[in-house]
Image 1 (cartoon, rainbow, N blue to C red):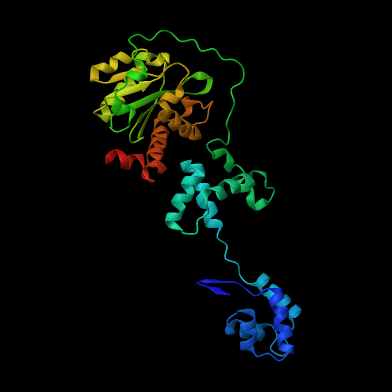
Image 2: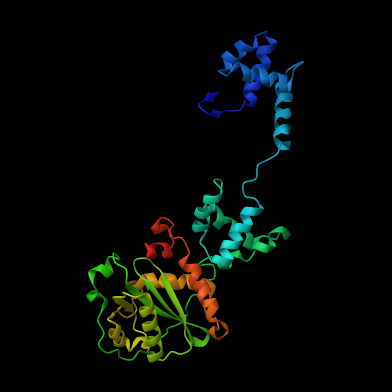
Length: 322
């Protein structure tokens, strides 16, 4: 039956009716009327599957064989697999982002749910053709999550002249103005110094600098250079790490500092989210002595060129410039 642009194929019960009506001497037009089908559909069915003597069973078998042998359009082809693999391993994009960007090039690109299912199916596949994709799951954001075991006590010294986050300006809280940053430290193997990460709360643009020391004077010096390079930085939100003990030195460049409450990392969720993505490039226990500054800047560039759903898939670089 034709309904707009849709078409429903003949089924076996209809073929049986065609056979019976032909034996009773009904014309093609009357058979079409009985089945509520177009005349051309009945005519084509008889010509295809039984021009001499039409039989429903034989016609059904011919149809099924024809469907098995006809060429199938494969949507999830090798090019799509290679694209997914490249974006996961090199750019560390999420399946959702891969799907959205893929549809800009191909309208038939698969959904992010399908990407997830395919990646996890490859993990357990024993087929030789699937071997290049068996470890893709490790490049998912939570693909290699580790759980902390045991009770870990944090011993922190006192940080003087601290201002808590509730005193931070409303413009910073609302993310309505550039120049309000969050910053944190990423440690490497053996809790050795790794990276200093700063992010603008409005645009999510990220700045990453390699550390060679955990001394507070060195870390604050690095943070001052980042703020000076950005220009017009107004506030920086920090946690209670001893590396930020000399935070008051940022006042020399007219930058106010604010601190989250102990064990409340969600109060600086933007930089925590960025660190989660950075960990996809530099997993925990990475020996940053073996990581070059050029590698760090490459990751910084990839993150700032990463489209974000909250910005309608514009990148932090595009938002920060605008």
